[in-house]
Image 1 (cartoon, one colour):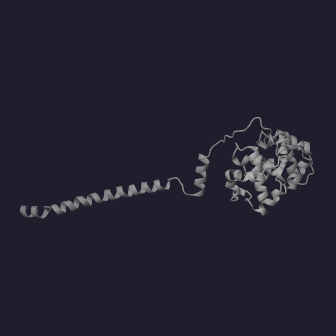
Image 2 (image 1 turned 120 degrees about the vertical axis):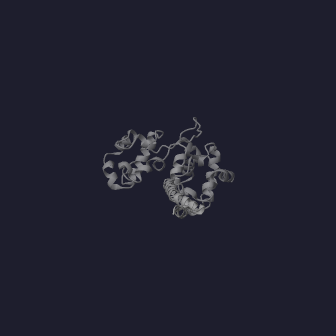
Image 3 (image 1 turned 90 degrees about the vertical axis):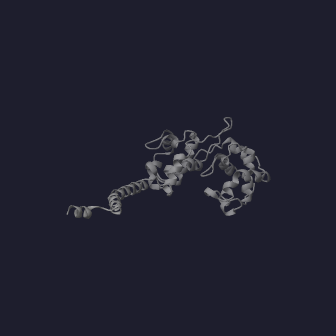
Length: 263
C-alpha cells in the first residue's frame, strides 16, 4: 500500500520544470508591467523640442543679451525726426496703447493731453510720467528729438504743434554732397542686397519703383538720414558700423536712382 502511494505522488522532471516556470511567470509579468509604466511616465515628461513655442523659447534662452557696436566718438550726432524717434522708441507702447499710453492717432486718448499744451507734454516726455520712463526709455535721445516725437504723435491726433526744425549737421552735409551711384552698386551688393534684393523685413526691393516711390518723394537727404541712423527694421548703416559715410551715400544714391528717383 505504501509503495502504491509513493508511485502516485512522485513528480517527473518535466512537471517540476513546468511548475517552476509557472511560478516565475507571475512576478516576471508584474516586473515587465512596472517597467513599461515607468517608461511611459518618463516619455510624458520629456521636454517639447518640436513645437513652434518650444523653439521660440529656446531661441529666447540662447539669444545674446547685448550687442557691441563700434562708434566714432568724434562723429557729429545726427538727430532723428519725430517719425524716426517714434518708429525706433515710442511705437512699442503708443501703437498698441500698452501701459496706459495714448494710442497713436487716437483723438480720444490724445485730446486731454493736447489740451495741456506742447510744453507740458514735452516736460512729461523728458522727465517721465506714470508708466512712461524718461525719454521713452532711451537716454540717448536729445531734448530736440523728444520734442519732435511729441509733436509727431500729438499732431497725428489733431494737434497743431510746431516741432523744432533745426537740421542736423551731418544730414545737412549729406544733402550737399552729391553721391556717385556708379560707385554705390558695389557697396549695395556687399551690404544692402541681403535685405533689399528680396524685400525681407519690409525693405523696399531694389528696382521696385512702386515700393520706392513714397521713399524717393522724401528726398535724398531724408533717405540718407534713414540709412545712416536706421529706421524700423533697418539697422544703422545697414548693420555695418564700419561703412564710411561716402560709401553709404553712394549706396543710397544707387538704390534711389534704381527706384526711379533723381539726384
